[in-house]
Amino acid sequence: AQSVTQLGSHVSVSEGALVLLRCNYSSSVPPYLFWYVQYPNQGLQLLLKYTTGATLVKGINGFEAEFKKSETSFHLTKPSAHMSDAAEYFCAVTLNNAGNMLTFGGGTRLMVKP
Amino acid sequence: NAGVTQTPKFRILKIGQSMTLQCTQDMNHNYMYWYRQDPGMGLKLIYYSVGAGITDKGEVPNGYNVSRSTTEDFPLRLELAAPSQTSVYFCASISQSSGNTIYFGEGSWLTVV
Image 1: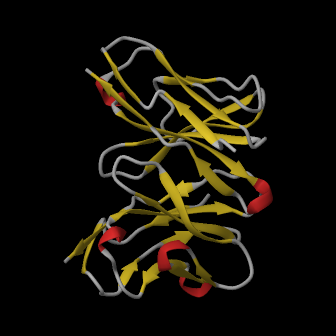
Image 2: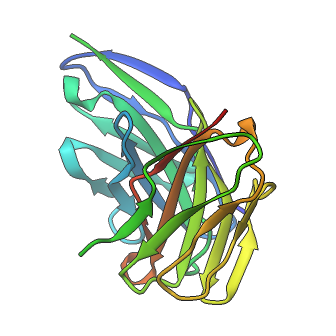
Image 3: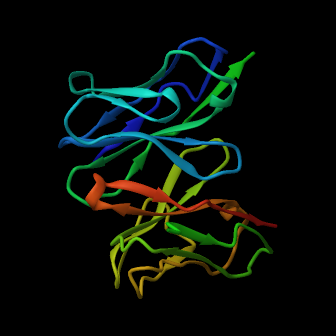
């Protein structure tokens, strides 16, 4: 079975500052890892995903994440926060055998101060 | 290309009433899921299906039922609505051909009063 832990249910940054949202996972086999963003009263939108290959993954809206197997982490970063980045972010994991259940972290609410 | 479609988007139910949340996907995905999201919480899996005719319980199945008579449709049934079922419900399907990418519906906001 797999699990996901997102450290920090709320993160606040100033506009223009670095965004770092933490995600650690546990998995018995190589995982597929995802970050989703949810804006208020909307569904979840895929930001980026890691399946195989390059461990640094670039997504939409300037976000990127790096898969670090030794640290079992998949932290999400953005060099410079924008007011429009304020949202809820979810890390998720599934195993690489097709169709396994997606397990979500508890979410991190990102607040961006002007 | 409609993707995953959920209806209704908003609904208010009285305690004890029943209703069905509809979910349809047009991507020929075998795997479909129902999640609920409570305020300030992550997503919890209610039920899932790995193909037509096959369903199984997730983490929080009590008070719900599902069916999967076709590949496209995966309705979620609430038989006797309770206030604890006030939540946002998301239907999803997985594309095995694109690295298990999950596609979500836009959500159904349900309030039980």
